[in-house]
Amino acid sequence: MIILPKIKCRSGENLGVEILIHIPNLEGNFTFLNTDYAAGVSSFDVDNGSKFATDDYFVIGNIQSQKTEIIKVSTVAATSIATATASLYAHSRGEKIQFIPYNQIEVYSSTDGTTYSLLTILDIRVDSLETYYNDLIGTSTTYYKVRFKNSTSSKYSEYSDSIVGSGYVENSVGSIIRKSLISLGQDIEDTLITKEFLYESINELRREIDEHKDVIRWPFRTVFGYNAGSVISGKYKITLPTNLHYSSNNENVLSVRIGKKRFPLIYKDIRFINNFFTGNAHTTLNGAIVTGDTSIILTSSGDFDDSGSIYIAGEAVDEDIDIVTYTANDLATNTLSGVTGIRAAGHSTLVDVWQGAQAGIPQYYTVDNGEIIFNCPFGDDYSGENIWIDYYKNLTDVNSDSDLLDEPFYMIYVSGLKWKIKSKKDPTLQMANDPDYMNWNHQKENQVSKLYTGQSVRINIG
Image (cartoon, rainbow, N blue to C red; front, side):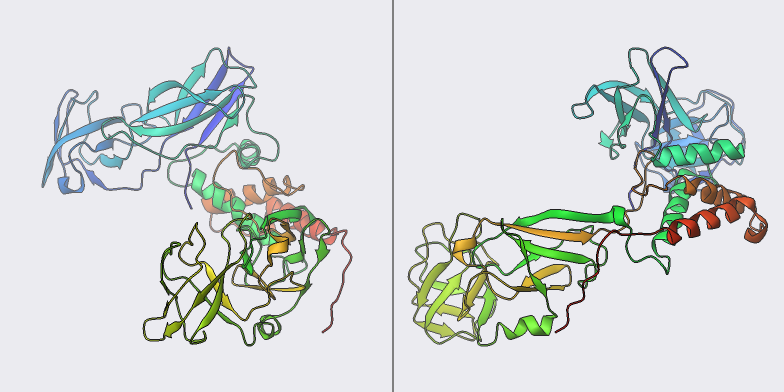
């Protein structure tokens, strides 16, 4: 997963809004000093200088140490690194030199959470886990986001999620982490209790309750009346939402409806649906075509007649099925020739092509490999109508403090996260003897026992 820059805010204690930005990930190349150095040097003997390149930045020293600093590389050799500027502090033999991809932070602010402007550019602090900035004119309703910058290459990280000046809301990841750490008297660490560890711990806790053997569906993850797209003449399938929980079958597609009448279609398996296409030829265009073309290359022409007509699907809601005639079919090259009747707008590659199919309004559907497949192509009379579905969405992993948990019982993760932190620091800790683990497990089972979907169950036979 992508780890976004981590930002937190607080207001009320001092003037304006205080912003703290966690240092970027330091998992790249590293080496070690081979000798002691006083302050003000611009060349270092190291174990392996070839791990760095000209214009790289590196951190010298341990994160959170007072004399740790970021320096830019000028040139490298096998066992030495020359720097673009002299060091500010003395450094000792054995200190770590660690690659860092960025040296600055851009801070953006917004009054509406939509339109942002650059507020300031900061140098990343490495003598602390966080770089501090005080927006003196910021308020509790000001929004902020940040990104890291390499001032030499002008390369940037992804933006952080936005956060309001008052801090994280109750059901945010940042709020859960803060409550857990405060309760334990624990701080974020550079190597053990990292933000990445805390995010993944919350994800593990959420998956544990989401995949509980007694859970079928949580009601708060059911999406009703989702507009999955519009009917387009000649098409016969649509792509399911990317956040559908298990898209390989129909288990989590609760209803499919078409148009303003929204009469529900009936689910059938793929073998039943395939029966409706018996005697039909279906393929796609292998290349775009224009109105004056006299030949058409198909992805496969093997099932098509030696001559006759084909039906080419539309590409937008205002386009009807295009009926095109041809006089010959070369099976070796999948080419139809003697073609006439291609519409003025032409057609794009991979558009559906039919022969013998009866277009209309489907009565049945199936779910296969992330798609809804209908029992016939859509007819012209229904083009533009909406396709509505009800479905159960999946659990989305968190990777930022400002991510919001959709579970109404989000507070139970405080106990679970406390257990995760303690067991990380002490692998010998036994869950059976830990009050936080026992509290987490009790609350988890209590929530599962209260599960009620509010939906009636209907069984279709046949």
